[in-house]
Image (cartoon, rainbow, N blue to C red; front, side, top):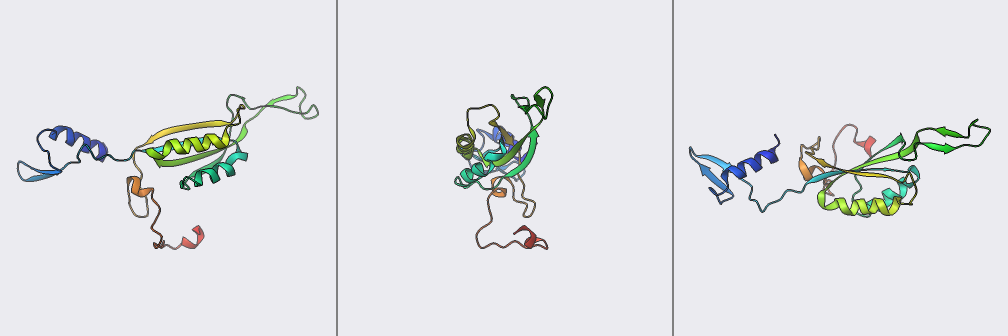
Length: 175
């Protein structure tokens, strides 16, 4: 059970009994509850599978939204077009060959409020109207933890303050 689920259960149990941000329970056990009005931003993973030639344009467009942190992979796959390519006669006897096509798989972890602008930016750049434009998947993210600092949730997604320097043996390799 996650901390968020535990907070929700405690809030439901104590609803009506305690109206304050904190309350003292019998036995002087101090319980901290989160008021219903406070909302935690939900994190979502947006996965886009696009044509490889659209990768640079997609990256440039999404960076305008100030969402530069992403993970991308070269991928091979086939969708509705089933990998069909019509080849010249000298290369294939039948003229048709089935193969996996090169694609680019890109993943962003963003707050829920950034999902729709991100999806619209991806669609604007990648929609040609033809088969093979790609797909976008949106998934919930249960937890995010930054390994270096132990930050959790949305704090783990935010960039370091401008004056902060990274310390480590391999820091020069990452620049």
